[in-house]
Image: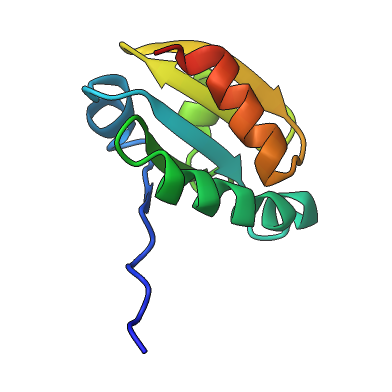
Length: 114
């Protein structure tokens, strides 16, 4: 049996956020999460699924809010999980709270365009 490919989700942090997210040639979905957050763990499979399914159109990143206070403050993150879609260095859409894969796909389709 062939093993599945490694996760297409990458981690970013205060130090790399500008380069990996804001300067990305592709839109980037950022999952702001924390290890202790049960809803964050619940949304993780949906994030992984869109990373695999949208790889040509979108990059997907995670950011641990406990370890990266500067980015957290810069974007006014008050609740987690928060999913933010960045395009051309700007926030294009935000969703706070857990959601299913189909809901995340609908969110992306609404905001990615063609």
